[in-house]
Image (tube, one colour):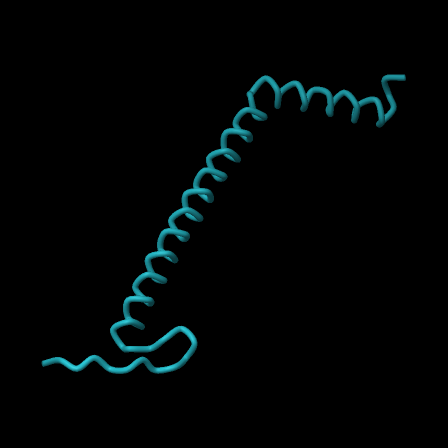
Length: 80
């Protein structure tokens, strides 16, 4: 019974699982995953803010150039 390879593989696997749980590896994995999720969430929020800022700047530029969103030219303002 103790001489079979399957028995020793099972013992090694159980021992491995005990060591993994004892070293608190599942908690470390969860902590790393949550940290990565927070970083990604912050990057997405920053990208959204930058996009909105770029859209506002583009709209301002279009108004300054006298271009309408439909692609037609607005009458140029006369300074004077």
